[in-house]
Length: 98
Figure 1 (cartoon, one colour):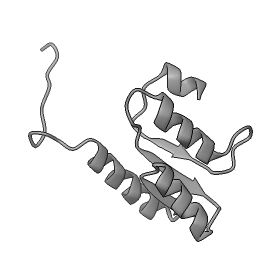
Figure 2: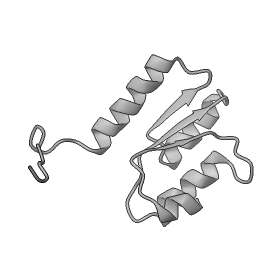
Figure 3: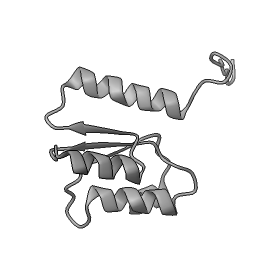
């Protein structure tokens, strides 16, 4: 949470089971404390339907149960990024210097 206050991130990936707080508590804090909503993926071993519903209702953009297949995880991250940061004009090329 300290790092989220100090730095800018494009995506937050949370496990439900964290050392001091639950991932759901961190998600709730992020949704209420950060200036702009941060796209969030819950990546956890908790596979109960109620946990999935609670995380999505709390604001998670997606929920993946571990062990996640690497290609599926990458595809889900890319989908979250596409939805969170749509390209406005089909792509912009920026050139700095020569």
